[in-house]
Image (tube, rainbow, N blue to C red; front, side, top):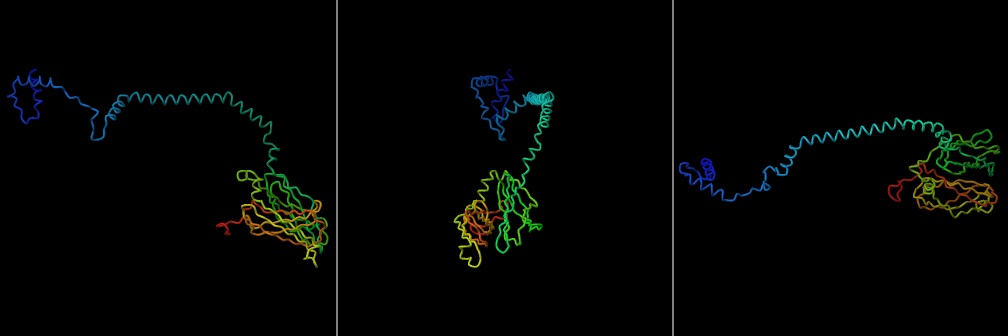
Length: 342
């Protein structure tokens, strides 16, 4: 006991440079021990500990907890994997069992129904194929000097197809020059051939040599009528027809004179637009002509004058039809800047 007290006394005198063990009496040791016991010990706040390397008390606590629970965490991880795998296999067997017991029978019944009802049959396929272009008998209009104008009316009854038509007129046994035109969906169109030289028109027929059909792209043209209005909004006004008998130009020649105005209300600019003029009397065509207007710009108004020979009867109705293939990109004029032609 005295030895322990002596060591305790020595530890409290460690700040001195030298310690003389022989000069320490037992009374001094006991007195020092009593004083140390009577003095209150200072408490150490471990939370104020700061490690110079950045190791915090929270990190040490988490590390200690992880080491103590490492085995339990590994067990929980593998347990979760086993649970997920078991649930996946259970789901697979339920779905596969349902298909084997019920699904196979349903698939066979559906296949029999398709075969019996002939869902993809002749009627369905026929609905996707465009109907043939309808034609009417050729109308022959006699002019002066044994010349004739031929007028043919064709109709496209398809609402989702337009066509490029290769055709020619046949007079007797002779075929005239082959030509090409187009016809829009749900359109009735006039095809004319002017000033054909024949002693007698004889039997004239209209022959369609070939037709190239084009289906409207529903992604680009969702509403055909709206698309057509946007591209073909061309207003014809101020129509004035002067027949040959009262024209100042017809002192020696029988010339008919037709004047009218056209306004391009579309946002598009066209290189060429054709205008077919039909003169009618009681729904019967008695005169035809065609005029080509070049560089017809958006919001532009132009005056047109057309003359042609021949003495006509009474003109009760005048029909002027613009004609341009709005599906052909080459008909549009491009611009570098507004008002400047490219």
